[in-house]
Figure (cartoon, rainbow, N blue to C red):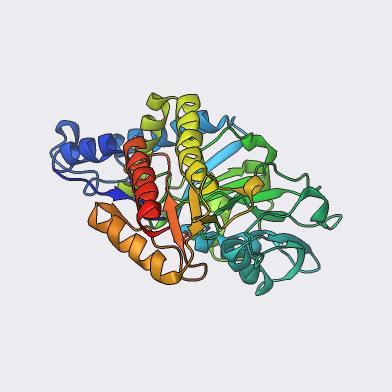
Length: 358
Ligand SMILES: Cc1ncc(COP(=O)(O)O)c(C=O)c1O
């Protein structure tokens, strides 16, 4: 078996152990004679998988019974629309921080539904960054405020969350469960699953029950958060397989130990940033104080050298290092399941490439 060092921003590398146990369970899940993809979502076997996945995630995030964890199809982009449809009523205003490509997409969706105040705007700043505390202009009495904890494309991460005075909603698609965080400061947080949580196509949404209950009741049933909360995400047929892999991934996080995992994430990112900082050849894309530990982005002196770097790395088994087309350069996405050995291989390659071409 040969596994690539997969630096993809998402769908991204999953823990090998999870893939292997899924392979074992694929045809016959624990003696049931069928796979999780084939069994009824109303049956006992599936229900146990579903409930355990929710319980493990809640435990990892420190959420009590005031919270509900929902599995919503359509990924994080679907949440961009669902949030204002539920919570941005007539005569209300929602605050959105525009911190990069993803938060900009979220705010555009909200603008299609209702009134939006752009609380801060550094979307196009180079080097990439997040707004400083004193830049935010929050609206008193806003319906909610929306931020993104980690801009996957630019590689900028919010290290400290603002106090907004209204229910705070956070898109954590690319850094959920990657570092120590107080999840109870939010009214809702969500993530497209395909980076730190599991397969693509599903968002994991953690929402305070009382907040969900405040959502619009005049939008279609499947767009109301209360439908997911009241039915434990079993109102209709849920994405059972994705939820099963999510649950296995959460068990893996628990087994690794959060502190250990978070420390490894810091170490992995630091190794790459140290090479960037120690060289006059590589240039980080994000300001130092906002550098992401999940998506490390940098430039080389020319686009030709960047293309050569990405090509040579791929030939050595390091795949998907090309930066997003809107930013260019190189991006190494090193989520929870990305192995230290892959970071070491990259760091060695970076030094060698600079020696030859610098
Ligand atoms: C921060 C962030 N938000 C939202 C999305 C969109 O997620 P999805 O493709 O699941 O809609 C992404 C995708 O990469 C992302 O990185």
